[in-house]
Image (cartoon, rainbow, N blue to C red; front, side, top):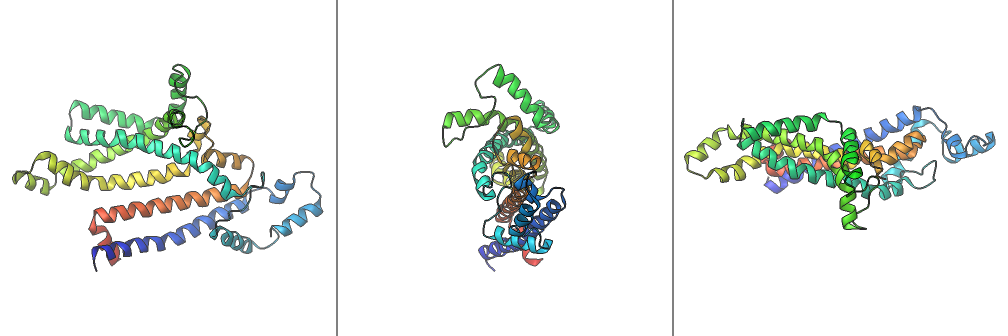
Length: 324
């Protein structure tokens, strides 16, 4: 079997595994929300609704049917992109997610740019200068980055930069598609607050991976053949050392795209995270279910993408996947 066929077979298996994962996530979220206190009909019609009105709405929404019938109806609608309607606004949940997604996506991309822009070069520098002053400093910074809560960091950034300096807005976000400069400035602080932990994680992971690769035999062999040190580092060592880091980045990217509730709340960003928090407070169950299914889909899609990239960079992965 050729390399391309091996890769396609490997990716196909990952897609097949994604189906039960998504089914499990949808079923678990549906059951847990079904067990939560609160009557959907009462939430929609309010406290002043009569028993006749409540009974009629329960019949229209199939709330008087068995749970498995309700779940099958929900699953059938979700399969064609219909995630139901909000109990509060009666707006389609899919539409609500689509409206909030650009803000969360802008925050996630900004955070990822911060993490990669700082974490990758710092991790490479630390591995090339092991146990030197710069390495010690980067390790201390990485430890602080992982330890500091992002909501505290966000509040400090607002106080020290947004309030005192006044260059960036304190609250809200402007999309870059509407205004590039305003979008950049409104994304800067939340992206730093959210991306700091990922930056530290990338630094530590990449440093450790590169040090492991540097100590392997093929590096010593390449040195013996007189290959330039920078060529060994950037052509061979970096490629192999990036593999574990790619996995970490992929998992964290799924988290970022799922929406950071804390950061979106601190900075007043109208993204998916803030919408989820509002839905929880208001017992808007269809919105919660829709967001859970969306986030699960994002995580699965990102994991498949990471696995594909991993298998492309390391043929041993897809060959091993074929044999299992």
